[in-house]
Image 1 (cartoon, rainbow, N blue to C red):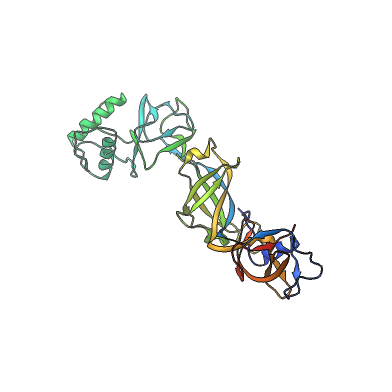
Image 2: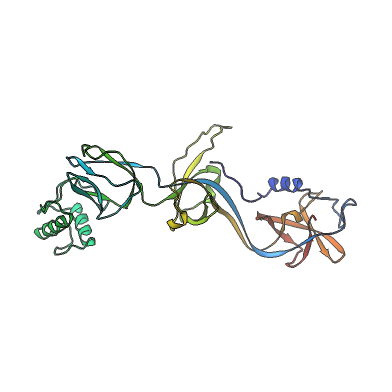
Length: 347
């Protein structure tokens, strides 16, 4: 999505902005042209850090929803409400009045776990049992009778049949908590079809960033997210896409973009918003400990370049300057200037 520029860009764009603001042209000598008025309003030359930033439009959401397909035969007897966050140990939904339970892990449950079985799936289950407070077994990759006893205790607490084994469909492993986006089944439906739509449990911001602006972002870079009501929240770039979308044809209306994802650690700062357009401020450049003047203090010289009118009491002198970063209505300048000097600005 095309960005909105938060500051005045350097170069020709700056010159155009100065012309629009009515910047004076000088003959090249030390005295202003005859049409110029005597110095009136002034501003101070300041030494400061100057940051140029770009604002881009993004979308706040929980991300694209995925579908949870049931793998346990039976009938759906309970479903969570949309918006429910499900973590390890929570019921995802019920089949035949028995809960299908969420646990933490990357490996899906693809076989029945029972005494004598070994493997990373066993280690994953045992790690969850320990986290849920069950003990009496060695936490490793072997399903022993002691593991079965812990599973029976867990099943007893759930109110389900105490088999000491874990069958496919009894547990759903997920690396992170999820949020229920929608119900895809109803109570009474067969449990071996689409059951729920789910998303990540935390909101994030996605930005379609133009390829030309890729140099503005890096993973872990701090950014500021502004909500529709003007509230600001701190964020950080968590991912930069590798796939380019948009037209590559010259003059195409849709520019080439990559998707940038911004994580917001303080979810409370986002209020109750589920989805909304937001603005993301990206810091493009920071100049530390530089001299700055208001942009309107710049005077375009006839011979090219810029100058400022340094005011000392009732007299003034034109001082040529080199410009640097433009930001927040000020511009970095270098030349025969010192902090604290007064420069003329339009009244």
